[in-house]
Length: 117
Image 1 (spheres, rainbow, N blue to C red):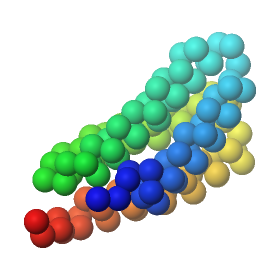
Image 2: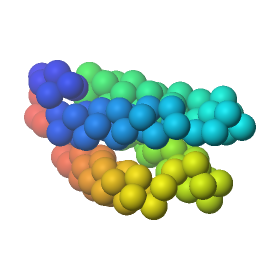
Image 3: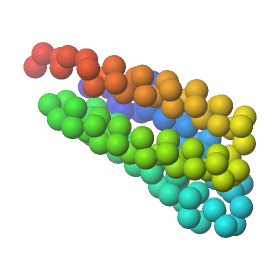
């Protein structure tokens, strides 16, 4: 079994979280401790779902569904950050590239057949 940290989706999620930490650090005081903190917390939860899906293959779909729920929440929070002018258009474009790639990988992983035991 490969370590979760060796998976491309894990590495891409790491890049996304690192970018979001940088972006939310520049939020105005008004949004930093509410919206920014929620983005930060939600993004970190994604790693747990990847790890669980990697460790417990028979429950992989359940853990990846959990990932998808958190990921959709995160994308909504990011969109709110853009609408509140906390996240620039350029930052939104970089985030969108990563979220698109991560989303495709998670769906492909979810739809992949389980390896034979």
